[in-house]
Length: 365
Image 1: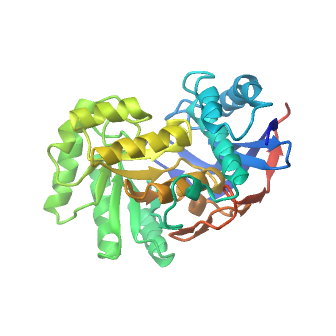
Image 2: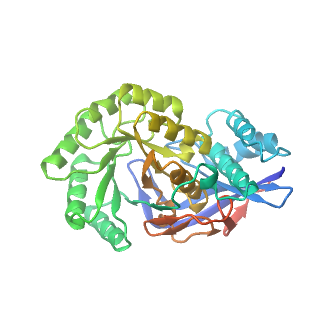
């Protein structure tokens, strides 16, 4: 099976409600889709999210990186030589992690198709059913409570609450949601780098004194401030999770050395694809650190790859935050992983199992 062509397209899917964090507001998924074609007729699919405030990737940069730098290295190569293909992608250029992720996902999809098995089995097997949380975007208190109640009605038992804009208002938001869910859901707080270390400790101690005990606190301080992250970790009861502080193995090893966090959030758009994401999960497992698998605002194309990884590395990946498809107004993908409220199910089709994707606008070569 040889690679013959790599085609790009733009996928736009509206969200159910605007997605708001301390860093940005988004109203639709708008991602670059990669389709790698082969001489056997098999097609591998991948997806790249442009998240300039986190990874630095824009749509233009993603398209240029793939079309001008990565794709020329891959055309004519054998799909079966996966390790070599991954090296070609990862050494093609520095950073550009979302572009690399999209191509890697498509390559792993093809590799699993070549061997006639779902990707998670190629990665080691596991249970093909997962349960995800869902994000409650930043907003006024009443709107966030309404979103939390709606999530409960849809069956979600874990709510990821966005905070980090106004520390006093954040307390009111979390307290109101806690009262509304009344023990029917766990609360995960995501500050998106919005607090200082002292603010984070102050906020969490105030919540604890009010009888509110979140399951975890995600990235309370700026990504570069590992000592600030450790300051928080050492002083609050809730486990602290690093997200933007860790893109790859080097950052994770330093995080572990400093004991700066209790959990790490793995996202394919940060790691540059599955190869480094696998390394992160394995390193964390060796050191007894739990992982969450997360995503940016992505459709079920790339999120499916994260689902397969989570199933295959369930010993390390103990928390699932793959709600991107659930936030979309509809799923543009036929086949692939199935997202039904909090339940995600992997089918038996080879690779990612994607049959077709609608509403993709081709990007001229």
